[in-house]
Structure formats: structure tokens, C-alpha cells
Length: 232
Image 1 (cartoon, rainbow, N blue to C red):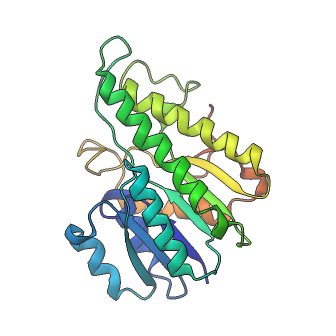
Image 2 (tube, one colour; image 1 turned 120 degrees about the vertical axis):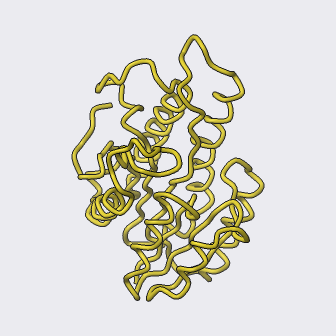
């Protein structure tokens, strides 16, 4: 009976992930978002076959993260948590290394890096009880130096490269866990825009397939949503 926790569940990839997971009646999902009271699409999934818990959690606030994670642990009641999906992120747009707002870079690091790091740390007691112990940190192809995407989206790319390093460090510190990063592709969400190539259901189907198939050998690696390994 798998248990999942994810951030940013009220829209885009997070909402579609929650929707697909709940098609399995044996699955329990702890879906967190900044404002549950306005997350009508997420609330509508409560009638799905699986079991849904909606948790208030703002990844930009350490205090909110601590409160939300404590609530997840309380709801688990000592049971294991199998999967943590750090999905929530911000992208301040097409800034450049020589033309950026320092606040945008600081905010990107705080939300995109510190958020997932703290979530994973606070949920570790429940992960340790699982036979899976998977941490899936959402990254981006823009974080890959090896694929050479050029100067665009500097703050976002820098923050996601830091997520990659965070994940590598998690994997090396705790060989019993399976932390990895995944690029969802260019998806038609509020962040990806209408010019994107992928529908959310296509990306999420691939992401979940990878998450369910990863092994200890996958720890600390960088994958695409198709399961292909991406250069650092």
C-alpha cells in the first residue's frame, strides 16, 4: 500500500501526479500546497479511488515546511512513507548571468533548493521506515551543463543545478535511500507555457514509471522523464 508525499500539488505537474496516483485504490497521497482553501481542482480529487490528504505547506517558508511535515508525520501515525516528490518550484524568467535581480536569485535558491532540502530532512523519520525510501527532486534540463542550453533563465538554472548537487549529497550521505533528480521535460503548465511540447499527463506518466522502477543503483543520478540518463 504505497504512500506518497508531494509539494506543489494544486496545479500543473503536481496536480496531474496526484490525479494519476489516486487511480490506484491502494495508494495514499499526502498532497501539499500553499493554499488548500483555494485548491479546488485538488480538493475534487478526494472522490478518487485512492486516499488523499491535503496538507498546507509553503516551500518558501521554513516555518510552514516544519508545520506541514509534522502534520504528515501525525497523519502517518508511525507508518512508513515510501516516496517524497519535491515538485514545487519558481522560475523568475529569462534573466541572464550579467542581467539579473539579486532578489530573484535569492528567492530561487530559497524555494527551489532550501525547500526540498528541508522537506526531505523533516520527513526522513518516515522514509527510514519504508522499504522504498525514494526521494525524487524535480530538476530541469536547464540545470545540465553538459547539454549546453546557453545563457537563458540564469536564476532558475543555477537553483536547479544546486538541487542536483543536493541530491548527489543526499545519496552519498545516506546509501540506504534512493534520492534522484528528474527532468519532466518542457510541459504545458503555468511555468512551461503554451509553447511547451508535452501535455502534463505524458510527462507525469513517465515520471511515475521512473520513480516506481528506480533501485539503489539509481541514487544520485539525473534522469529524464523517459528514464534516460542526462549528463550533469
